[in-house]
Length: 73
Image (cartoon, rainbow, N blue to C red; front, top):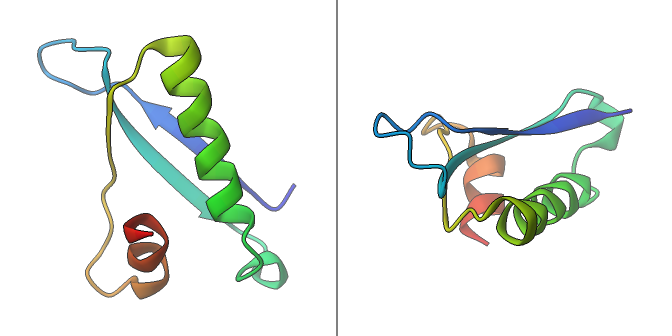
């Protein structure tokens, strides 16, 4: 295991069609190899198909350019 992808259902109105998505690649040697993008894509597909999620959001620091680029893609 090199990291993890998580979904959180934090909407104040209990709207389960909105989810926060989070990725962490903890193992430095595993970064930059597309694993984060693949993991996030798989989690999003699962959330849409099986959980009925229609909208995702993520919280990223302004200085985390790697994550910003990945999520913008």
